[in-house]
Image (cartoon, rainbow, N blue to C red; front, side, top):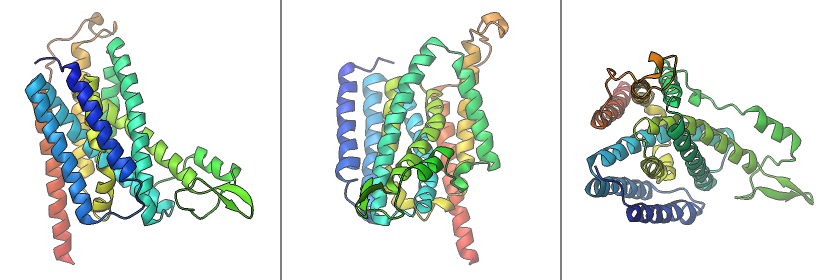
Length: 326
């Protein structure tokens, strides 16, 4: 494996920034409901770009970074799809008009990228100094996997937190939207529109999902460049995916099972790595337990593909069975 050259990283950031501006700022600012054709074109384009990027990374830096990218991208993409479940419920809860949903999603995804970028920088700095944090990350992912497996997920019902409820009672707010405006004029007085609490709800949801996605990706790679690019490619085209899967999200019944397997696997992988590189004095006298095997990168990719692919296939079969029974 060779180190990723600086010129390639700079070029990647420039291209991704361009993609992001075009996808979310130029296209996302148009208040319309995208057609199925438009959605498929956007999603296909970004998937192909991610596959090409991984191939270029393979040629420049070697197989290991490329496999780490593919593994991270698939995991983050699947978690982003899971995120869409909550977005659907929030949009419904706030009665967001269809034509405004694309704009709201573009803001939400921008917030998600900013928050994940902050989490990535913080996570990389912490892991560089305190390798024992892998124990916490691993335990958290295993806990999340168990919650998903037994169905104790918050996605089924969105409840406003205390902060949002407090804002509603303190700040004067209309019940109706006024386009994309945060503030409007009613009876000569300036008041906020529901767009304010909607953005806060989307933002707090992004924070919640960052707590899942960042430990998961650091369980697959320690390279901040791969962590960041995996997250960006997973977020690109997400608003089109929202409209394409809108009516089908509740039919992906086995997606939580596939995600639970992936997160549980990564959690176990993190704990094993933490034991291998242990520095905690109360575990084996502060020495690493080198008899604990390290899971190879290629095996992580295989587990992710089989788990998520199997979950998607099982969901399709289940959906067809239900359709034939009607």
